[in-house]
Length: 282
Image 1: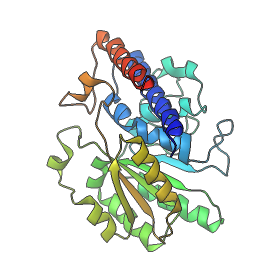
Image 2: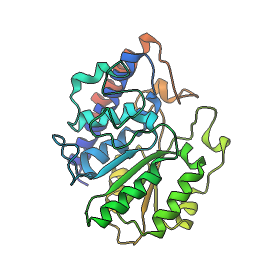
Image 3: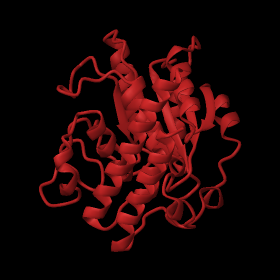
Image 4: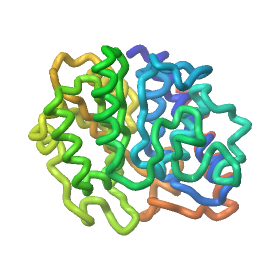
């Protein structure tokens, strides 16, 4: 990919991070660590790879993006704002009564939200059903299922993985955020899940594993997932850093759900803006 395009995607990722911080500041808390860490993946998904119509987010021709890890809603809202699906003036309504941006993703409230998430391990099974339905209708759309590494603890995830491979769902792409943090401990200490590439391959999937904060690698992985000729479902494993882009949040040992001190929100935005300004001069 040309450097100009990577620079453009970098700006999208920066704005997704900034929108997430603004929403977090409005509530004083949130799953900010995940939003900052996953912003590069969402920037590539919504501003490069996916087919969508911002003015008609329910268009039958759209690619489907399922947020199985519903607590990442703040990250997806930021991506939907950057993609033009939701207006930026709704940022300050995040998590408030009657808002279209509840703290956990709910399809009945939010344009562009394909499923109500939060009970982890549900998304991949739903994605399998949607992918099967689109294939029956001879649709060319892709179904993306975005999930957390914690969802690898769920048996339903692996049942769905077997089903997807059995049916040869080449229109299904699973995105796994491996940030190695869960509510109670490091993900690998809660339940060891490595070697992940070998496991997914054994379940019949085409597998890639990349640095989820390396934009060029993320773009390449999305492109290969869409274009590979294998008669298998595809999974991309993204190793990400929680709090990415805000150094003092990157260094925190516990980033799963954080309450940032009131003075720290503006410090976080300033740190993000400063890093973006430095990057723009390179």
